[in-house]
Length: 212
Image 1 (tube, rainbow, N blue to C red):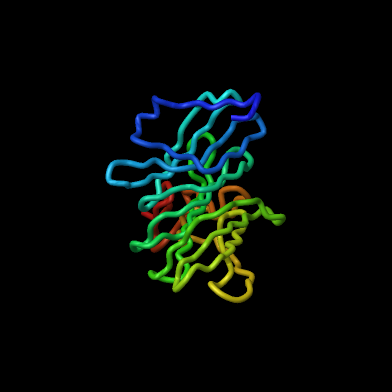
Image 2 (image 1 turned 90 degrees about the horizontal axis):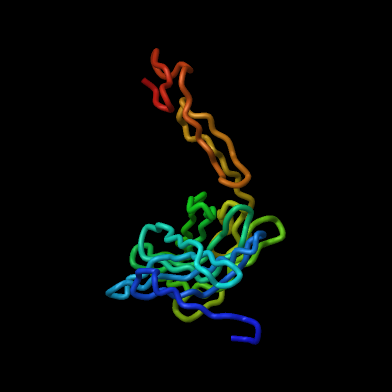
């Protein structure tokens, strides 16, 4: 380590192997590190850890993704973080974006399976974009290695086609359920609050988001 720095080992993580690839810090000086857990048989799980400025482990998060996953980059956002990495879709790797709170709650998770089943992604870096979104660098292995950029909005959505220019994509939060109140939250995206009391269907009434 450099003079005045530190290094630490966490023997109590209770996992065969933990690897970290990127680190950022929150406004209250908590370091957040992104990486992966390597289990027996080389299976991998996404991993995020919080540390104090002396390297003491404060908490660990293992965000649940549909298949094996790994986080290669992380950035601090208000009340939590956004991680960028990879997960498997149909046997091939796809870019993964997720936003979570430091209280271990997932606000949203996006998997962008561009290019079909012959595409393999190598995750790169993640930075905040000027419009509140996120810009990710990576590499797609499809008949050779092609460097690519992924530009997502603040909710992790991508409105650009696999090739060519970007287009504006309107997002609706209407879930077609008359027993929910639908709106768009600036942090969590679409919200659907269950309603009780309003009439619905053929003489029915809403009861906690369900028409009965």
